[in-house]
Image 1 (tube, one colour):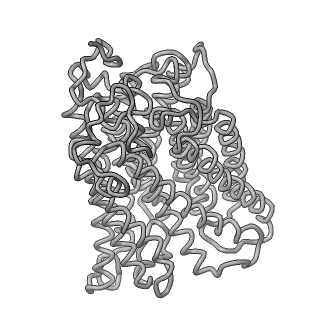
Image 2 (cartoon, one colour; image 1 turned 120 degrees about the vertical axis):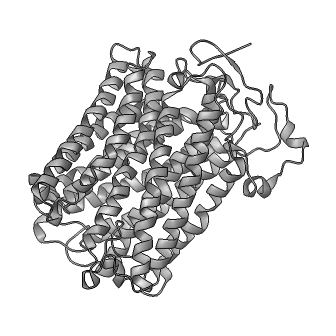
Image 3 (cartoon, one colour; image 1 turned 90 degrees about the vertical axis):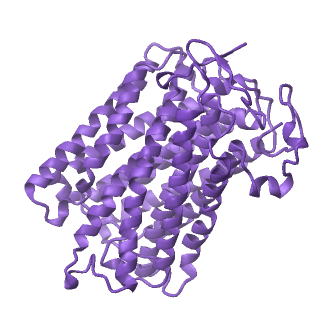
Length: 543
């Protein structure tokens, strides 16, 4: 039976247990879901809905910036748009999407029957709904949505209306959801692997998520602390971030970025995992340097804790502090470079074919590397002092978050959706989606490097005349990019969810490895009810 929409059909090898033992059907199946596949589907659909909401906010920003002068929105609303676009995209789209992938794929890849804590899994998903409703609904509160930037810097947060409190509450709930999801993932990976699958035989995606989950547990409480202090400053007379009472607004920045920098690695490490699954499959070679990939992922995670203040060079930091954070930041480029080298080495002399997952993976490597280099330029304190808070920074982080995380998710969707839905997506439409996405992404964000170097500041609703041409170009690119993602949903995702398309083989990609290709397509509702016996490589089921 399809683990996606059809609750009744059966596939050979599926024992149809779920239909007989009072398993819920219809809407109850989704509300009371404890099956990892259903919850994975819910997460992915939720993340896409949030991507659309965040996308509308982004297009409003780009419509305002299409030409100089104030056109559509007043500066106050503009700041609300930039703030909420950031919060919704980071906490509503990217992170839940990766958790959706983890829910779907980790039990399949390690030969487990489900996630370790099935009910907590359901809870951690449903927590996100009220949080997302509060974030999206904050526009309708008195004074409008939070407008302090997604970083929620003091003292701006003191000046916000009641929506700020709703925003803080939403962040708390989303943080709790992330922590529960992470505990679930760690326990599943460490305790429920099929016999014979040692840690160093795990698929790279599982490894990257194991490390990401530890990062999440480490830093989410730090964010909770920072925003709780903001809350008490607003309502209970404390002065953590108010100099008049002996506080310091820069302390907020330190606490926030101690969470914020590991957070950006939380959003990219699972993407590295997905790419490390896809590139070998389409290069028809084993992943080059598996062990070094694992160590590189772990090193990125460890180093991520000592680089936070590179977001703060402009706060009057002592030069010794600047030097430390500059060198530490540049050090992270080494393990990241190792990864890129390994992907390229995997492709080297491989028998490559370029189906849509591979196109997105190669697109990812190219554009992510560019984003990495622009990050190294921001990492150098003397240069950063000039480009801090300009569009150069906006260009940099969109190159790593959109062309990094989002491209990898698209690649992962095209790679695994045959397993999820039991039908093949339409290859031509997939390729249209890729090329439109790649071109429009670069048309949108590449000019921002030039705007930033010329000194255009971030988060401003208006700008001088000299920046008009590049802004107009970026806005056109953004609208094409946005509409392309709507095309992807309507013409790629929906048909596969409804079972339209040619039937997928058990292993649709000839060289893909891993246990997920040992179960029928679509994946039965229950898989690996008994732990499978694995071969020596832990990629095949024997017996």
